Length: 325
Ligand code: F6P
Image (tube, rainbow, N blue to C red; front, side, top):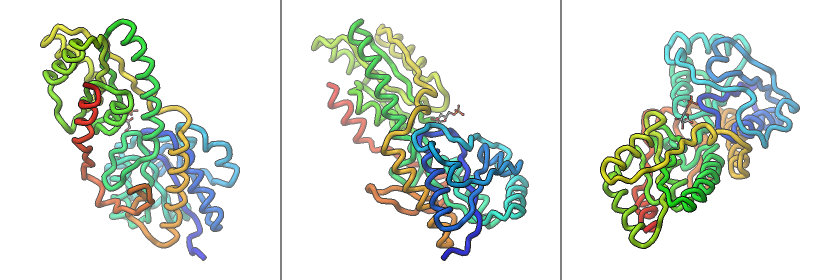
């Protein structure tokens, strides 16, 4: 029997499909163990403003299939300051909250790790981001849904590309990581994928397009990860035009990739991770997050993941190039 009486759960950073399923997993697992749960609104902002709502079984009814996060989310630069983390700890103690589940990406995990280190608030993370870029886990909730959303969009674009013999550059999200771009690129049969981690030259892409033209292929799809800021695909298009004269159409998928009903994979992974996070807190564990390795749940160090960069496999780019020759 657990000695924990009350825990809190919040979502932080960019929303990701499956976050609601993860909250449901946390709330229902805790209630099953007679542990009270408070939902914290708007990520770290809600910890600071004490925006807490008691969660009961009905609070998480009918949300497993919904995108976004009913607790709302946000990025909170104030939480970078130690004073803010002290305020959060005081608020949690006043409310009798003895442990936290943080559902979010790498920035959210950095905040959670600092809160544990400085204030000794037990925290367990659940990785939720469409970027799939958290070091230590093969998978983050939302990735599968976002990939499928982007693939569906690119398939539509390919109809136009083929009908008009056009070159398209489709930009996907992912910030500084190229996991989304690689997964989408392979699934849509892209001619080339540009990601921040591994350099592919524009010249190489042009050669690739020319070879396609020689064998009568009139259209091409290039996938570009957004990188530091959205709009990078326009620079690529200009660079290709200057070097080869090829005109391209640019499509930036943007936030369309973040919304929508989570896939079965995201709902199930989120449910399992949410439940595992509560069990970890019950066992007195902290400063860790629930990850996935070879399709099995694992625990990973929170502080050990922060500031480390998960790297994509260069072989995936080579495979994409080879298969679209
Ligand atoms: O981290 C998730 C993500 O969707 C990134 O892929 C993207 O760069 C960023 O969030 C966009 O953030 P915002 O919605 O705050 O503009």
